[in-house]
Image (cartoon, rainbow, N blue to C red; front, side):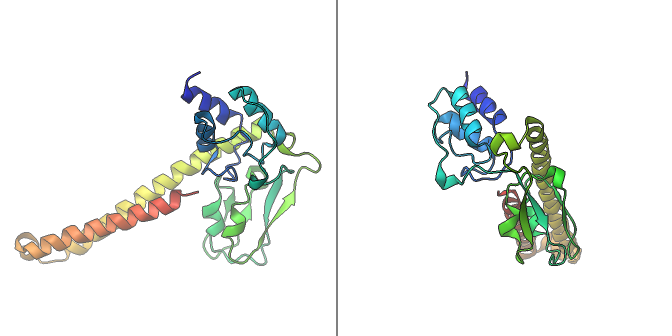
Length: 223
């Protein structure tokens, strides 16, 4: 099996919660790290013991106990927003890897329970601690609490999330560049065409606008 095929097989065996507790930005990155030997097969708490057994079978490595530094296997937990305390800051929306939180600036937010993966990434993002996790699977943990169908849905939503973030970054970059061009268009034509300082200023303004856009895009795509 090629390294690429091995990484794909490992990724397919992961729960796709995109929680980053494995130490990597997403399940795909963790799968590649396992395939290359960089990461162990016991770094995914959502997959639990069953997940480790699956990865052991795929990689032909010996099963290991779950690395306690990554967390503990547990039930599926879903995020719930206390609407009375929500200030509509949108930070949890930006943190959610599967776009399951809906709302707008200064408007109450709500979690779509059927799409929440329990990744917990929205908790540290909330400045007023109005998000809590509720047990959704009782005594069932790991893969017993999470189905392949749910994993497939989560993967699709995460893929869409990444495409949306990249699209928004491109559109924002285009708006900033257009705004810079519009400001420069207000200069007298003769000045814009003949003044070296004005030409250099135009170049600098555009480069600064593009740099800001690239910086925002880099921040938006970080896990």
